[in-house]
Amino acid sequence: MKRVLAYLILILLFSSCTKVRPPEPFGPIPSERQLVWHEMEYYMFVHFTVNTFTDKEWGYGDEKESVFNPTALDCRQWAKVARDAGMKGIIITAKHHDGFCLWPSAFTEHSVKNSPWKEGKGDVLMELKQACDEYGLKMGVYLSPWDRNSAVYGTPEYLTYYRNQLRELLTNYGPVFEVWFDGANGGDGYYGGTREIRKIDNKTYYDWPNTHQIVRELQPGAVMFSDAGPDVRWVGNESGRGSITNWSLLNRDNMYPGGDFAKILGAGHEDGKYWVPAEVDVSIRPGWFYHKSQDSLVRSPENLMELYYSSVGRNSNLLLNVPPDRRGLLNEEDVKSLMAFSEMREREFKVDIAKGKKVNATNTRGNIYKASNVNDGNPGTYWATNDHQTAADLIMNLGKDTEVNRIVIQEYIRLGQRVQEYKVEAFSGGKWIPVIDGTTIGYKVIRKFQVVTTSKIKVTIVKSKACPLISNIELYRAPGE
Ligand code: FUL
Image (cartoon, rainbow, N blue to C red; front, side):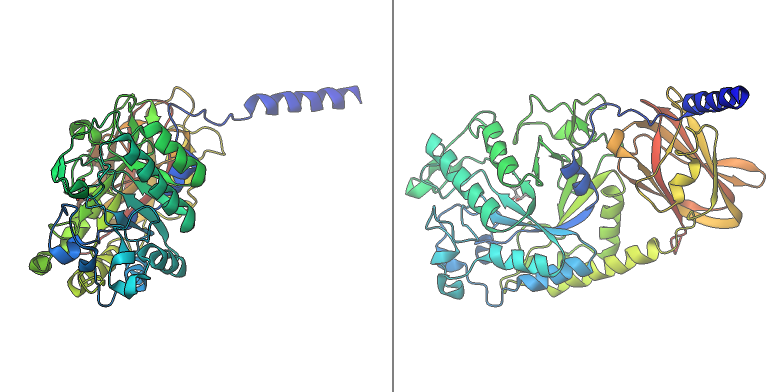
């Protein structure tokens, strides 16, 4: 009996020693609202206001409300197109720099309520909210801090006005997933008829920390975008280019919207103190607003595909602007291109060659964090190495010679962004051949390469800040090439 007991105690002791500890978080980690945002990946920007009717990009603020008169406005068409295109939400310019409000704000006369559209009874925000609900999309709002119409712009009173409008938008239209704070502050404007230049100090005028509080209080699930976050950062250009090295980290303490930070926003900061991932905002046309003269300049499906690789493929979300025309509809040209792009994406990523294939790793943190977690189709599981093991190989056995030309890799970012350097090799002709190398991974990278015929793919984490955690690897043979 004694011997049995001793034996049992030994077994217990042994199993508690070998129990694998989960990896500790490393550095800043994303909040729940940011995690939800990462998974959205691709959504629509809608620039629509008086500019659509005056053929401008920046309205001066003196536009008569009567110019806003879409003949067939249909937010359900926008939402259907967005849904069919594979987008997850729509962010609308509720108010652009001209100050005209697409909803009947109680705090200004400069809105849809004084326009001929629906005899002043219309509310674009409400129609969009209902359309988004119907098509399973999330809604976001752009409320321009710069207001070239407001007589009080530049004084402390404007801040109260701005915050009142923010409250309206965040109270009356259900859940909002993103609030977009633009950094533009051009100076001159109508400003209640004074037609002058008003300069503000970007750093202090808007008292951002207190404005942010309103968003947290009214919409705790919403992320806030600006050049400097706090939750999502601008990528530093409007041409659709995410940075190849892209840390979702940023030292944003001394940054503010409209500051001169474009050069650092692409890569972020490797040693950043906060989790502030990048969003790529870009238009399907040369302008942000609809101009008939640009109907022939809509981006081709091939071009949109390139944008996809240089945004979602580089650890960024893609916010693609598709501006409604004067009817209040997404134009046929844009819709055609978006749909063809969507089909192209489906063809490109049709069959995941990696799924279910046998995987081994040179280092594994016990059975829970096994190598085969990278291709089990479950984003909640991941392959991890032991602590201090910051380099390791993962080998995927494809079973037979197979053509491959795309790879998707994802880190398990809940515990931080870690990988600093990786490479991919293919086993061909009896040896390992280099395919691609890279720096950061983060939420996701999608990489293209020349077709290789191979029976095995090796992903090497060359350098990582802490033990790497890889949640997903996919392989594809995209047509062509
Ligand atoms: C810029 C604005 O000035 C443009 O008009 C546009 O809204 C773009 C997305 O952001 O800063």
